Length: 374
Image 1 (spheres, helix red, strand yellow):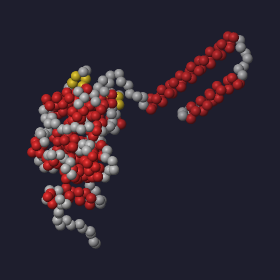
Image 2 (cartoon, one colour):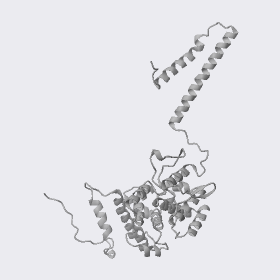
Image 3 (tube, one colour):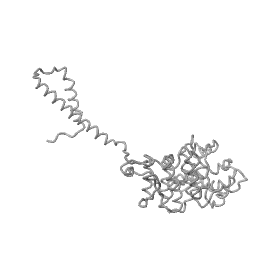
């Protein structure tokens, strides 16, 4: 039996000045393209390789700015990024800051950056959703210490869609939000219609909530309701974007960043202020945040739009009520004829439409109901 083999006997970069620095990326890219047999790469692995190709291409094209070496190292996240984070003015002790930096860098709207990403992702037109896969894989490298059972729901939640269109429509930057006062200052600017501040607050909160288990992927049909009211069943990015547009929502998100970083449960908004919910699990907070995304933070007295079944029940009730009213009107007509001594029969031309209508209704009703028991 003859088995084809591809042997790598050496490596020479297209740019000799790069030496062997791009060798690992080149090998991973080659392996992904060779791995097309019975056991192909998982989607996460493919996204990881594609993400590294994107970052390397952006670096080679000079699209990572003046501190390109540090930006590249922080984006790739394969080695210790402490020095690189510090050189960018970011506290390396906060994993959510690095993830947020990945989001910011790969949602920039520069034409050259978008062209490179579109080519590497094999997309004719780059949409915000196309960026999600590489961003998730690079961002989660800060959380590699999470156990598999905790990483799985985090990845699932992010894969449902962790981005929103405004992130690519506006220029925004990542600031060193590494203490409570910095979060409060960011919230104040976000409340004053500062769009970049609002985007930074939203991404930080989204990363913090998802990675701590307080914002989950949309659940099944059994998890659509809270207190009988429908919740939002879109991706985590859409939930955060919607809540971010509410003043109470920004309070909840900013407070969540501070408390989760401190190892505390996030608080909820009720009766005009933040309150503790000691009996809530992560799934409870998730459900109520999704409820607020759909209906705001004051749902008292809110009624859902009627379901299809409820609409059918209402139509049947209205039909039966109209029959009762029609029967009453017929009785009134008969009583009046008796009182007036009228014995002349109504002409057929006058009552024919009524007979036909009753006949049609009898047949229509028979088609949608069970037969009469014998």
